[in-house]
Image (cartoon, rainbow, N blue to C red; front, side, top):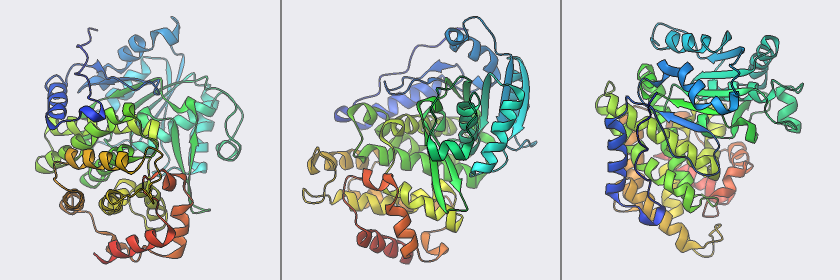
Length: 430
């Protein structure tokens, strides 16, 4: 099928201006019903097709975009991993039907949100029994992470627990296609898959080049059926990823070309969906933000707010994106005060301050204090409880857990246990 011309070039960090973002996203929204390939950074091998209605053409898109990988041989045995099948997802059976055009399809419902080693192992065993040569994931972040892990391990003999403990020695031999149905996780374009260890009380993850899907088909219309609490938390995840990847120690000029526009799009997208949850343009804006944020964190990883979110999700039951946003504004203010004495970024405090200024502008705010207020106000208007609703968060076990994650050291300003406890204590009291 014909492909529309590529979208306007995303500006580099030093070129960032308010109008650049509006032009890019509005152009994309106007032609959202025609599939087109999004630009991706050099460190992401996934081909990304974006546009409203694209999921209905899934089989054709796979054949067209992955023709070189298929080498003229269609998939013969496809494992389709989906979320819970309900009447509230009118698009789901259409997407599954498209997968059946690719070969003998086995459809498996993801066993649970926040996948565990045991739940992912169930899907992995289904892939092996089916002798799947392709895995297609259609769902939110938990579905994508489960399916990505199953695809990576399907061709070998290692268990999920074994892979988490010892790594994955082999390359992925099973084709992998991701179709996100929420706007937030960005898992369709990253090389990681989260697995929650409830027994050990830890968030664990696989990190492997084989977890990059071959193809991501991003259809904003699939997000329309997400309940309010789901799209709100997912949207906050996209915003948190965009902000954190913009200030991360591992950020580069290339990653900033994706992260800074994502900050603007995520915040504006949340505002727009709040105003009208049925507005396709608003959903498209939020979906585009999610993809750009995912493309950014694929190279930079995240920082302190994500590290804080892990124990909040495991121990307090707070959905991931909501948990990230609960400290995002406070950490923004903390990072804005970076000095040469406490800067972790080898490029220096002025570089980090430049990144914070760019984030502040992307949020359409004049100062870090105003940017923090905008983030906190978004959480409030989305109807999500503040941190104090979940009890004290400055407990020693939570603080010790947070500082043990590598994300903690990717923050541009050094944060000690004492500083973290003080920040959590202040946020719990607000």
